[in-house]
Length: 152
Image (cartoon, rainbow, N blue to C red; front, side):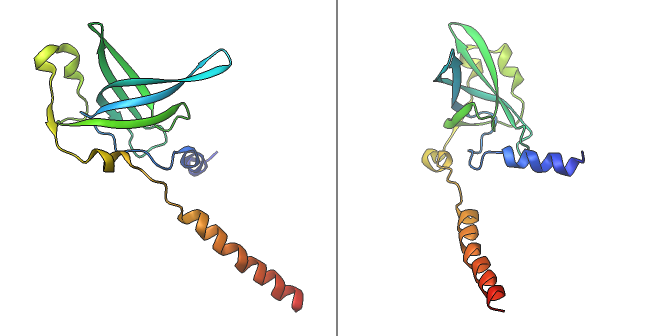
């Protein structure tokens, strides 16, 4: 198998619309959890301390939160079908991609400086419908070609 085939398969698996998540963002990640034969949605809210391979189909974010005094980290594959939604709640000013230094800090020293941003615009990711419209426009042209061939 060539790399181009694998790359094409990976591109097909990517979600069409995801928000631009960066390190330092506080996000709410809604994930599907399977219990028995039923699915339920679980929300995990925390600070993004790492982003990996943003342009790839294996893009990953690591989210950290403190629950009952214990630090909890969870990694999410952004394009996974189990990740239902990612909502950016707060954006902070950071100068690094990997904020692993937050693991050793607690309380006031773990705070990040807030940055103003348009929450509605960042979280509103719409899928462009151009490919579907282009496919509909191409169908009549194909029918016309078939009619021309039939008349000839």
